[in-house]
Amino acid sequence: MLRRTALHILPFGAVWISVLVFAVGAHAEIGIDRDFSGRVNVESRWFPKAGAFSGQGAHAIGFVVVPKLYLEDAKGRSFTLSTFFRYDNADPRRTHADLREAYFLIFGEIGDGEWELRVGIDQVFWGVTESQHLVDVVNQIDLVEHPNGVSKLGQPMVNITWSSDWGVVEFFVLPYHRVRTFPGQSGRLRLPLVVEDEQVEYESEAHLDFAARYSQSFGAFDAGVSVFNGTSREPFLMPGADRSGAPVLVQHYDQIRQFGLDAQLTVGSWLFKFEAIQRAGARNLLGMEEDYVASVFGGEYTFYSVFDSAVDVSLLGEWNYDGRGRNATPSRSPNTLENDFFFATRIAFNDVQSTEIVASILGDASRSTRALSVELDRRLSDQLSLDIEAIHLLSIDKADIHYDTRRDSFVDLRLTYNF
Image 1 (spheres, helix red, strand yellow):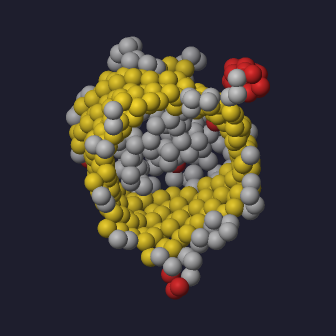
Image 2: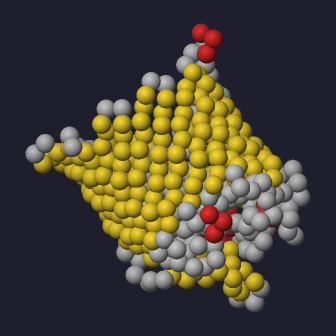
Image 3: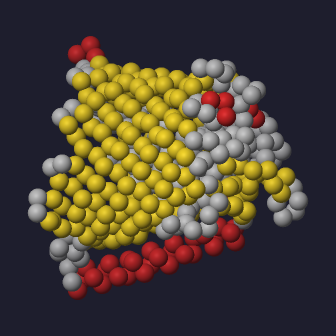
């Protein structure tokens, strides 16, 4: 394990040493401005119940280091470098490193519009809803980080953006495919069979993907339309065997075409949100290719200055729909989100410590699967913050592919130092 971890760290160390040496020299000789920042997390995750499989522990501790370097010359051209490293004492798969950002940015003006060119590795976010982001398809999910699927791996790309009064147009050339991360043999929140990380199958070995998005604001209405053509970020899991002959799940990635729409309408204290996709080329849970439509629709209402205090309270509700029904593939653990409701309350205290509490419940309308989440964020000082999160799996339907995660409710404690 230590040897494998060292092999992950060494390339990132070499990158950082080279860039830092260049930054120091460039700052002295040609006047390049630099900014070095980042965060260090100390984390502890506790599972109240014993695991469903042998080797799964009840407690995991570890740390995360995310340094970031920003360089900019006198003309505004810049280079951003951000790496990620996590150590976890319970699951070797969760100990991993990644290059989240490493891109050059140049920009200019043509007529009444502005253009930007990013070349390198970056992270892109599309979407407006809370429970899931259907249209967000550029980056691969770093699933060992959290079952909500929000953390992403860095994606190599060439990104050209054009913005003017009539909207923003983005084009992406994506020359390399990243494989999704999954928990290992001793990891919690995993399927009955371990997902193999060394055997990966593709419908096409030509990993050159393309994406584009147009977005515009029409007063209180914001909308975006997007298209993606290439290798899916969501794998179909096939039964197979590892090198020792033990049964495992093998990742297979299909060629897909996806059209997406996201929109948000602001009406006073109301926010109405909508995301929808039409995807072709992907397999369903039975392994058959099936074109389908999926959507998320919801709203958010905020009560400002409750009882004449500084506290704001927001109520959120969303409905997730997938046209494949029971044959929908699991987008994240423990829900397939084919007919699910999401309800949440966000309490922002608006105090000096930026205290915020979010409580939510996600449930399947046609099955008994329910998951409750509560999270508290609070700054302890200018550089130190505390995050406590508890996810309780109230029930998992026996027909759900994630039934064996029913024992994997957990409490996360994260202490973060920002520098």
